[in-house]
Image (tube, rainbow, N blue to C red; front, top):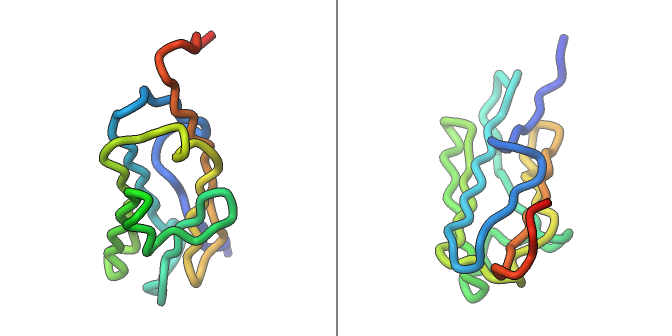
Length: 105
């Protein structure tokens, strides 16, 4: 039997322009049960309730999904984001907020 795991939609590294919308969606895979919680971490700090940092988290536990939203991304929002459900392996992605001077490659 496969283990339940979280999955964040999109590539493992995301590049966004300064001021753009950052939206991360986490879904559970191979999980027969509804999670008790789905927490988001930014650089190992739980951010589910960080409205003062411009982070808004909405979880639909019966649907086994959670969305993290930042309406205007700044360099402070760069870093590692992890989705940690109560009943599955976590998932992570790295976000880079570019101020317009960096080159993509």
